[in-house]
Amino acid sequence: AQSVTQPDIHITVSEGASLELRCNYSYGATPYLFWYVQSPGQGLQLLLKYFSGDTLVQGIKGFEAEFKRSQSSFNLRKPSVHWSDAAEYFCAVGASGTYKYIFGTGTRLKVLA
Amino acid sequence: EAGVAQSPRYKIIEKRQSVAFWCNPISGHATLYWYQQILGQGPKLLIQFQNNGVVDDSQLPKDRFSAERLKGVDSTLKIQPAKLEDSAVYLCASSLEQADTQYFGPGTRLTVL
Image 1 (cartoon, rainbow over the protein chains, first blue to last red):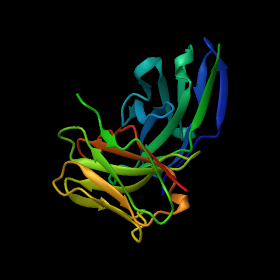
Image 2: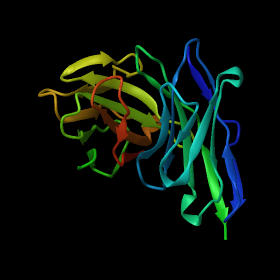
Image 3: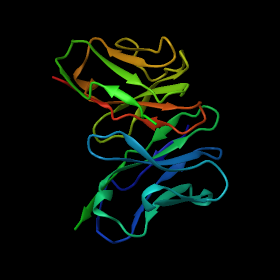
């Protein structure tokens, strides 16, 4: 069965600093991988997704993620964080065939001015 | 393009009462999902519809939860009777087809006292 681990529950960075949020997955085949962001009181907004092809994926709001099969990872990065990026970030894996998403427990990002 | 609509946004009830949530997916989206997001956790799939048929309801507590999508468009999720542990955010999502990206609504925050 597929699973997702987001090892960091909370991360605090200063505005303008770089960011990397970790995501590790467990799945037997090539998974579909997603990063969503959830602002307080809001639903989940898709940042980016990986289905196949180029392992470096560009998303909205200046985010990117890299799929590393050998490490079973799909880490989210941003070179310079803005105060408006403070939110909770969820990694999800989708099983090809069933298309059922399994979400990680999320990483809450705090941005210091 | 209008997003996924949900109502109400907030609901407070006492245990053993019943409650219903409504979701209107993005126009043309055949697949509709209901998720439960307990505080501090990632969303967990409750039920998935393809048009008006149920694809997956393996994690729906069927003794108290029910859902329908009679005309293959909007959907309702009902809880009867509610328990304290049902306090959560209930998210609705939709996708064009099963293999496509899921788009989420703002959610309904349920508090059971």
